[in-house]
Length: 88
Image (tube, rainbow, N blue to C red; front, side, top):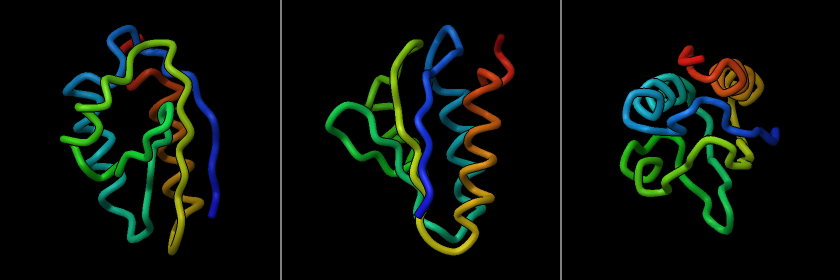
């Protein structure tokens, strides 16, 4: 299991477009990927769960990947989140 803490940088947070991009990317990996936000553990492969979490700019989150190809999944998640999903 690997995990990393992030601060969401893009101005609109995890709105529909970045949430869908994130879900599509994480769904390519066979491992479990979760986003810890507050007291919630969110399935990073579920658009509905991510959207319902209302993750906004400045939110502190932890992404955890567990299983086959976990390091690659976390690396891609980090790249997307740290780049602000290309919205900055």
